[in-house]
Every structure is written in structure tokens, then in C-alpha cells.
Amino acid sequence: MKRIILGFLIGCMLLVFAGCGGAPQGASSSSSSSASSSATFATIDDAMGRTVTIDKKPERIVVTSASFLEPLHEVGGDVVGRPDSKTQMPDYAKDKASVGKVYQIDLEKVLACEPDLVIVNKGMNEKLVGSLEESGIKTIVVDMKSYDDVKNMVRIFSQVTGETVKGDELVKSMDDKIAAITKKIPQDKHRVAILHSTNQGLTVQLDGSIAGSVTKMLGWENVASGETPLEKNPDAAPYSLETLVQQNPEIIFVTSMGKLDEIKASMEQTIADNPAWQTLPAIQQGKLYYLPQDLFLLSPGIHYPEAVETMAKLVYPEAFK
Image 1 (tube, rainbow, N blue to C red):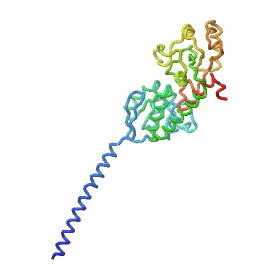
Image 2 (image 1 turned 180 degrees about the vertical axis):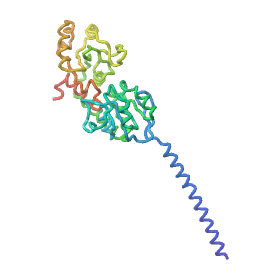
Image 3 (image 1 turned 90 degrees about the horizontal axis):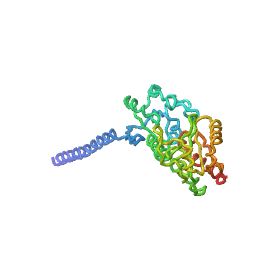
Image 4 (image 1 turned 30 degrees about the vertical axis):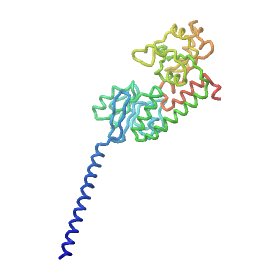
């Protein structure tokens, strides 16, 4: 009888221990499931001042700028749709669906790609954001004019792909290249003017422009810094030869839109027609330089170090031999 009673007590104790073990295990599973369902893949602050929450890694991305393709690819991303481009189309994106021209993105073509994320170029395509969000599609607005913009873009893209280490490595690589370039040249404080030439005439580029950003990175002074910008372009100001003469720049850079040969011919004619140009030190010393469109008309993106080297090499060619 004692043995029967002892066996019964041991059995009860085992049941109690099993129950105690089972309850926490079940609670842990429930907590884990709850945490998993409430977790987010990424939280991103975009160029429109919005905080965008992404629940899971995007699998179908559309970009509205070809300039986004290469940096996104470098941090492990791919796209299902992209705009047309003659100059910035890498081989791996040529067969992707077109969503129109960068200045005329076709919303229907974007929706036809069935994206779960659309990356939008600030200053060009923000008008798409409302319609896309109404359709249940997440959007991130990105700016990439200045070098700081580009570095922030790389970090955002690395959050989108989940490859933040690759993003940090890419930013460091760009920083190191630019630091090496600036060490090669004398630390002179040049006074620089940056003109933008189109078929409609000339404007002056401010610090927020691509060329203005590179000028600042080289430690030079943009003589137009602080001027009142154009109403529709915060990175440019009205051109005035009288003002340019007063500013007395040592170096003049020209960015352009259109055929470069025609731009050069037009500038040379403009200079020849007005003697006031001949009073400028930059003209007297032959320091009028034309900047390549692939690096200075559209954002160079992760090729910003090449833009910095190009401008530095024009002024100090001997430092790069």
C-alpha cells in the first residue's frame, strides 16, 4: 500500500512540474508571435520630412530616376520598373519595365509594375506620392543634389535592402576617395563663379547645386553664395554681367544643358561681344572651364568623387599626373 501511495504522489508531482513547464513555454510562444507581428522591417526619414515605416523587405521596387539604379544595386537592391535614360542606364536595368521619362513619369505604367515600394525623386515627381499612397503603395522621396544628399540616399537604400553594412562601406569609400583628392591639391581659397548655360540663356549656380556642392568640398568660395535664388529653382540665381564683374572671380566654371559644342560657341560669342568680360581675371588668365554634363547636369550619385576630381584636375592638372 505504501508503494502505491508513493507512486501516486510521484505521478502527481510530475504532472505539476509538466504543467509549470508548459505554461511559460506557451506564454513565450505567444509573446514571440506578438513581437513578430508588430515588428517593422525599416523606419525611414525621407526628403519630404516624412517618417515611412516598411513592414517587410520590398520585393518589387520602382524608381523614378535612373540615378537611383546604381546606388540601389550597390547595396543589394533590384527594380521591376525604371524611367528611360540615354546616359545613366546600367546593363542590369536595360530590360526592366519603363515607366516613362524622368520628367513625365506615367502613373499607369508604375501601377502596372505592381510595386510594393516606389522611390521618388524630390523636385521632379513628388506629385505622384498622393496617388501611390491612395493605391496602398509605399513611397520614399529622396534628394541627391549635394554630396550629403547622396550619402543619406545610400543609407536609405541600404535600409530598404536590409544591407546597412554595405551602405556604410560605400559611404566610407566615397569619403576616403574625396579626402585623397583634396590632399593632392594646394589649399588655396579660390573665388569661383559657376554659370549654367542653356538655349534660354545664363543663370548662376548657388551652393546647393551640384557644382556648388563640389566647389565647397574643395574649399573654394562660390562668389554667388547668399544671392537670392530664382523663384522656381532654389539652387540658381539670375545672371548679371555687372554683378559678375563686381564679384571678380578668379575661376569660372560652366555647366550646361544641350549640345556642348553649341554651348561653347555661344559662350565665346557672348564674351567677344562685351568688353566687360575681358576685365575678369578668370578670362584674362584663361580659367574658364566647361564641366561634363554626365557629372554636373544630373547628379553624379555615387560618382561624386569623380566630380570632385574632375573639377580639381581642371584647376590643378599637374597634381594628377
